[in-house]
Amino acid sequence: MLITSISDFRKDIKSYLDKVVKNFETLIINRGKDEGIVVMSLNEYNALMATNHELSSHKNEKRLDNAIKNLREGKSFDKALIEEYDEI
Image (tube, rainbow, N blue to C red; front, top):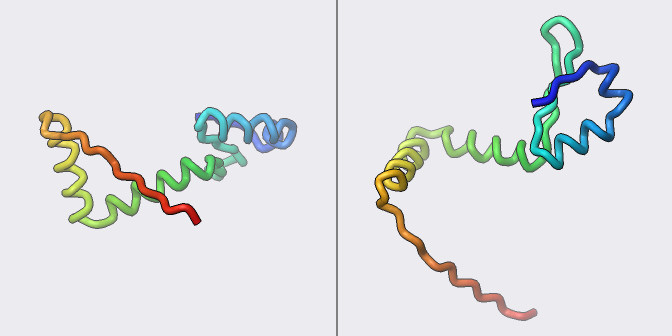
């Protein structure tokens, strides 16, 4: 996680945004008192929203917990993916 002031962010905005995207960093821009802004890449945001969605219902959360438990207990398996594309 990177933390900067708004003044430093203004001085070097491109560098900060490059670090956020390239290094999967989260940037906190401190604006004084208890105010701040969080900057993250679109990929990180989408992953966070997907996780939030998966954990938003008890049923999904339970299914995910069971999958993790099975993986840890060696009860997982590999399955080949079938990829067929029709030429247009």
